[in-house]
Image (cartoon, rainbow, N blue to C red; front, top):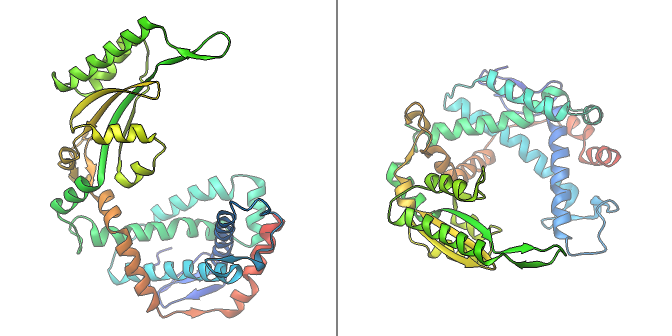
Length: 361
């Protein structure tokens, strides 16, 4: 099924919304009402997380509000928006003559069908009761994501009309990322009575000496963390090292579950240098990698040499940088989209119907 042709139906059966390019089937509309219902429930639960008297099983969603809007109206608007988003992306893909691999879409859709739709007899029975076929389910969960990614690559990928220079992406990475590695070693243990006690002096002294050795291997001998791992295994007679290594956005780092003390120690550490410190009865070997050096490894996957694995995918970083811009572009095009609504279909498969079936399970 190739929706780059004059017209096609996304999923089987009667249509709910359509343009001169494509149609959204009744099954896809139904699925979107159900998904939007689940999103509404999650938002209502989050809004009432501090309300001890709230019981999501007992609530009447028709009386609830989501984002200051009646919940049923919010669900309807969200379901419609999902349908129109797909129709908009279908149009943009056609307008830009982007070649679509329907076989890949079908393979991805089938994977979702097998895992979720057919994941259990109960799931299959529920979706059939809801009125969502295998094809509608697969299309809903696979097609939009595929088309969105292809549109993104067309605009921002290599040779795309809005492609970013290496310098722009490197600057973004250097300003917004942090790269760190650490090995923790608890200076506490448990005695025969289950009480927390200090490890014995000899073990503590030996561990500190080893960690200082690892620091010198980095700072003086210019060794890599891989060398530290091998040395650690020998020193502690273990097969694996309890290390943690991340390259992440600074904003996510700040929100991570690491202790504030450890975050500060990582941030205060000099680039391409190692340090040893004790925080809250735990000894840490910390290494902070220079993001400026890492930024030089940014490239498109198609430009990587065969077998090369240590590069940073440029398209992934551009996606972080430009996803919001693409979403705004799609929203603008969606507002101008010319489409038809099958009111009979929308009425027959209403939000209230989806809510009732969802409650029945």
